[in-house]
Structures are given as structure tokens and as C-alpha cells.
Image (cartoon, rainbow, N blue to C red; front, side, top):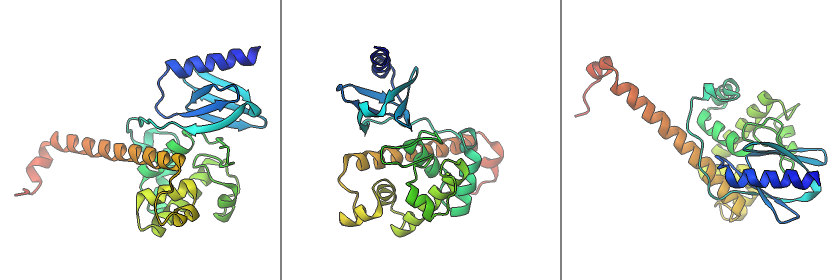
Length: 232
């Protein structure tokens, strides 16, 4: 059967190809496919993985689980990433760090503007339709609207939790109600705990990479070393 051949090939890709950001797609057959992204297209899932894409009937997918071991992508300039201009615009409008927006998008959709989760969250920043409507979004799959609304929501959560990044991310993933229910702490859900860890890991790496780059440029500039006041 051709479907089984595709599934077997996908499993081979999952086993042999390491991924930078991955989730497990669990099939009724018991197979666990490692994917780097996925879309729900009607009654089919389009799975993205190293080596290509595979389409499977949605009825064969029983769960999509986050991978606990996560290796974040190397930090690069926002301007060199997909949707860099839109990210910078939203970052400036809502006073949210562009690297944080980028890290959230990487974890939520892997920069796929058409991504749809099993909970019906949609687009680059995986907005639920009710949240998107509340924030005035007309086309939830439009990158500009999605990033703008997602960043707006992030800003609101950061204000709510007084810039506590872990609680902000937990609320973005599981909802503010659950954060409150568990005593203003990260809810004890494997998916939420993994999500917070992944985003923070990517964000920390991006900030560390930016700092290293700045130090390298400063060290290599004779004018800076000559005019900068001494620290001691």
C-alpha cells in the first residue's frame, strides 16, 4: 500500500536525520514520526521532515507531542530570517524584543504561515481564532496580522506577569487561566514545560550570540578601544 510506503519512508527520515526543532506525530499503528512542521489540510496532515514532506489521513494521527530534547537553531540576524521586517515592526510597536518574537514563532510554527495545530491554533504565532478576533485580526493566516496580534498578546501577558518570561510563555501556551489555577506558576503539563524550555533556550542563545558578536566587533575596532572610557 502506497501510504505505508510513505509512512515507512518518513520513519526512516525521522530516524536517520537529526532535527533542530521537532515534534513527534503518533500514528494509530504505533509509529512515532519526527517532524519539523505540519499542516492540517482538510482531512489530511502534511508532515514536514528532513528529506521532504508526507501526507497522511488525519484519522491516522492520534497525537502530536513535543520532543523533550531540543537543540535551538543558531542565532542569526532577524533581518536574515523569514518575516524579519514584520517582526521588527511589531517589536517596535509593542516594545517586545524581536528575538523573543522570533523564538516564539520558531517554536510555534517553525515559520510556516499556514500551520494549524491540533487545537486549531493558526498561523505563524499559532493564534486561536477567538484570540485573533479579540485582537482585531481579519485574516489569521496573513503574516503581518498574525505577527502583529501575536506580539500584542505577548506584550499583554508580559505586563500581566510583570515581565516574568516563564509565566508569560506558559500563559501563551496553556492560557492565563491555567497559570492562575496552579498558583501563578508554570502549569505541570509536559507540553507547556517543554514549550517554555524550548523558547527560553532559543531566546537565550540568540541573546548570547548577539552579545558575542557585539564584543567581537568592539574588540576589533581600534577607534572604540581608544575613545571608550576606562572601567577602572
